[in-house]
Amino acid sequence: KAGVTQTPRYLIKTRGQQVTLSCSPISGHRSVSWYQQTPGQGLQFLFEYFSETQRNKGNFPGRFSGRQFSNSRSEMNVSTLELGDSALYLCASIKGSGDIDTQYFGPGTRLTVL
Amino acid sequence: GQNIDQPTEMTATEGAIVQINCTYQTSGFNGLFWYQQHAGEAPTFLSYNVLDGLEEKGRFSSFLSRSKGYSYLLLKELQMKDSASYLCAVLDSNYQLIWGAGTKLIIKP
Image (cartoon, rainbow over the protein chains, first blue to last red):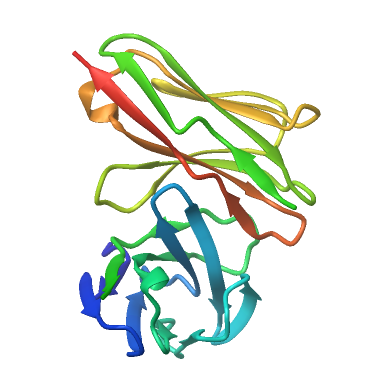
């Protein structure tokens, strides 16, 4: 069974640009969560999607947005990039709508903002 | 606010035992997860505790005390491959995962 895939794996952008990251969950999994990980900060929750609907949202500015498609693939977009957005962005795949499902993480997209 | 505390870094010797502590203050509690994350890789699930007590899984065990807001991950017979960061996360009353910053474990021969 293929795992969670994220593209691209590495990305370099400059301030003010926008970026779109993609996540394909494990086949059969319907829920996707997005996290930002920076050294010393731990994983910060961005948002969660289930069946194309945003089910939960973290405390990030409106520059961060996401969506989920009918095939469960998800994208997140960051507009007007800032230096502080440099981080590892992780996507987690969850099997169903259960609240206590195990999260399976993708390898992440390493975003560097110059 | 919600808070998860873990030591930033720990060092242990190959073959020994190490205990990584996690204390939490969250709005509600629906369980606690431990994940392992090797450098440059994705976190992988280790354990889930929702009731008090010890859960054993091979060389790894996880303990929970809800009244104390406390958990630990116990690693026995340490191997070099156990060098990684260990992340503690609590599922709060909204079923949102709150993550600690992680404990970097360094294993020395």
